[in-house]
Image (tube, rainbow, N blue to C red; front, side):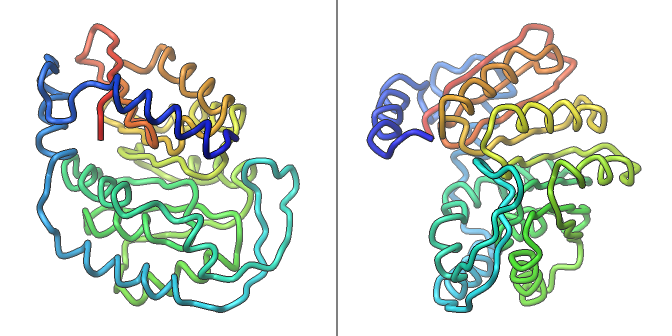
Length: 266
């Protein structure tokens, strides 16, 4: 991964070179609408307060759990003791991006949502709240972490979430095979390495349609994640990408004949 200093320099370059975040100069009607209606949506949805209250509880939770981590740098599942509040402080998506996920789902209204990387369940809750009629399948490597996430879902009275635990390398194909309908929205935030990220993307393409939206987390987290992002952009199935620096949006829109890539300030 890049150091904080390296990432900071990259962010500054992004900020000063990205397209205007208000939509000025964006000629794609689809992207312009997305910028205006989603990226710049300032409405204070009721779900925001409800989910952020759960985040505040997690940030104060001093429970110690045994966590098995299959993420970046882990080849087996390294077991270690973690305090819940430490996980909440370091692993949860910041409010700005978690609420963007809510708005994306609220805008596109996907019926089948998949999340790779439940963590403590904050982003999952936002995804589920944004479309209560959707089925949200969320995958988490650690049983102990998944149990904390379940508690959040119970507190929020969310009934449309299914948690799958275990190593994604072993569980993802099972989820794909057991899901009848295509995934319309996929959030990948579970393994910040090039090879697994590309492999998961390829696996999931078999269970998507032209309206599917992929969201990749931390696309500039490391050199190999940047390489993965570049390869995804060039994939034959991809017709449109939007780089928001900390996350990347990928679209498979068949009606779009020319491939386009946008870097937009957010």
